[in-house]
Structure formats: structure tokens, C-alpha cells
Length: 164
Image (cartoon, rainbow, N blue to C red; front, side, top):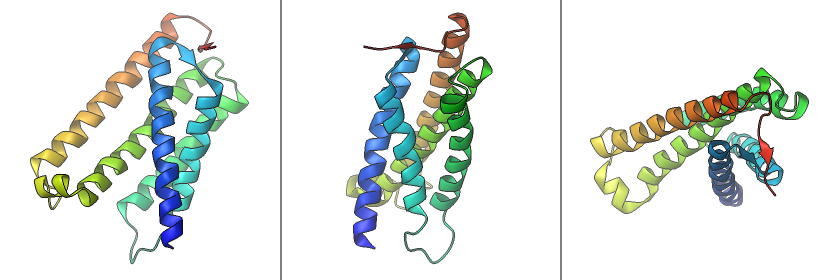
């Protein structure tokens, strides 16, 4: 099981990094198909590899994983089936943003559990530093998603231009 955990964490970190690049592209109206594919598929694999990790009960991470899989189903339709056409481009932006937000929420959660300096700041994760970190993340993702959707709508029918 330790090997699965290491693989799960590595995949998660690559998915999060690709997701950050993906999101930065949205704000510029750019899309890098390879980055998009890495983000999408590794985010899905991250969620799926989290389910078999040992736990005595269903944890918030399992719930987040399930929500992410459901959200990614809509993102899949918008991105791969509908090719970001019409409202499906907006659907993709919103659902992909939710998936990236959930990945980053879990990253912050795990960081406060595993990184000694952060754990000292919020040992029970009910302290202000943890709440502030999660609050800033939430506000940032809402703002980025709104900006990306507005940018897409302002540019007309085209979802994104492909970056070279």
C-alpha cells in the first residue's frame, strides 16, 4: 500500500501543477492541449487511486474524490465530446476549476497534516491559519473561474486559441 500512496501523491502533484498551468492559460485565453490532457487525466487518476488507500471509514478525501470524478464527467463531455463548443466551453471551465480547487483543497489539508511547521500552526485544522489558507484558495478559485468565463464570453464563439 505504501507504493500506491507514493504513486498517488506523485500523480496528484503533477496533476495540480498541470492544473495551475491550465488555469493560467484560461486567463490569457490560451490552451495547451498537452497540458490540458495531463491535467484532466491525471486529476482523474488521482481521484481513482485515492479510493483504495487504507482507511477505517469514509474520509472527506473519499467524498472529494467522488465529487471530482462526477465533475470530471461533465468536463469530459465539454472538452472531448463537444470540443468546448457553445456553453460546453463554459461547462468545461467551471467543472475543471472545481476539480482543480478540490485537488488544491486536499493539498492544503494534507500539508497542514504532514508539514511540521504548518501542523504547529493548526494542529486540529480548526485554527485560523488553516481556515485562512482554505478561504484564500476558495476566493481565488471563484475569482479565476469568473474571470475565465467572462473572458471566454467576451471573446465570442471561440473557446480558446491554441498556444504554440
